[in-house]
Amino acid sequence: MKEYNTCKKLVLFFTLMCILSACQKKETHTILSGRLPYFENDSLILVEVNNYFPVAGAGDSQYQILTDSTGRFILESDQIRPGYYQILLNNYPKLEYDIYLEPGDSIYFEQPNWNQNPELKINGKGAEKLNYLVKDFELLYKNSSYKDTIRSNGFETEMLFKSYIDSITNIRTQELEANSTIPVDLKSRFANVIQADRAVTLLSHLKNRNRYLNNSFDYFYPDTSYYSFLENISFDSLFCESSKAKELAQLFLENKARIAFKDKSEEEWWEENLFWKFKYITEQEESIWTDYLALSTISGFSHGMNSNAFFENLIRFNEEVNELLHKEANRKLFDDAISDYLQLASGEPAPNFALPDAKGNIVELSDFKGKIVYLDFWGTWCYPCIQEIPSALKLQEEYKDKPVVFLYVALEYDEENIASWRQFILGKNERFSQVLNNKPFPGIHLVAEKQFLNPVIKPYKLNFAPTYVLIDQKGNIVSARAERANNISEDIDKLLEQM
Image (tube, rainbow, N blue to C red):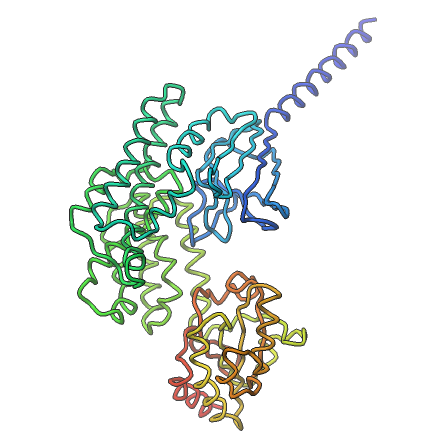
């Protein structure tokens, strides 16, 4: 009888443990669902805000989100930790706001499709702590005209634009302070988000104002009083907790550099601004904000490769900034980005790729080992690329009997664009056929669907076209940002002499 009671107690104990375990599992099971218009049939990732930086990418803690043909998605996980999260596409945030998630939440999040009355929807278990986002969205986007207004030429002076943004910021801040239902820590964080958003909008205006006014891409230099909004920002760790602060870092550093180069030429800007930023950052004190400034320079590395001193300066900057970076996760993001770019240094093996030609046959870069390869990333949508074609034809004629391959990779987005590309290289494009003298475009032609987003060509760090790469007969990179067709002959001749 005693053994029976003991056995009964053990069964009861294990039953209770199973129930507790099930309850615990249920409490940690988190569901995030919603709809993101404009991101249909996309592969996105959910990341903790502290574990990513735009252009640098995300750390290890990330969750894949697949959207359907309407932009709807659902993510379920037992691994979600309490904190702020953001959804990224190609390393850039796509949610209007960071959202706070806790284990056990079941939140539905829907962004507007920017119709006449855009509406942000957040509901479900755990959504009550995010209700202030809905209220703020209503204040900021009472109708769809806000974005059009700040992207217009309707402000006679930059100070009128600033007054408009300041008035909206004041309303948002007052509403936030008057809201007694928001926890103190969330209220403090969102106050910083509002200030960061204000700064992002005002600095973005300087990049775009001349384009809105006179279709010019020159940077706009405001009256110095315009910058008063920066005086009220403390770039401390609390301020740096949001995605908006990360977005601000790049604009902030760009503005500092633009002011320093105000009286220099555009050519000097492109050759020297990245290295000026390197120097500026190494003169700052260690902080998370300095981490963000360093990470923001990655966006300029692709253009920076046009300078012969790029890799030498990058290695030096990497050594200096590694002692300066404040947070280990940021150091890892930076080191990973540096490693990716150093693989494009002269003498490194050219990243291989396999892409279809106009008939659908797969061609690999490695197929041409033993010959010099002049690689041209271009697109039929790119007018500067098309302007280069006469020089490209002349160059091919110059080396027609030499072991030189002219490989053209067209960056086209979808099947419709690819069909147009096929017609283009046959010399049958109605608008530009005369560029090819109504003849087929000589050389070897491949196509990369999704343009710059094609994963096959990702190692080449492309963000503009045309981009040229020169590869030697051993399959090694000579220059990942080579000269254009009318200036490349000297470099090709040197390689031919070596052969």
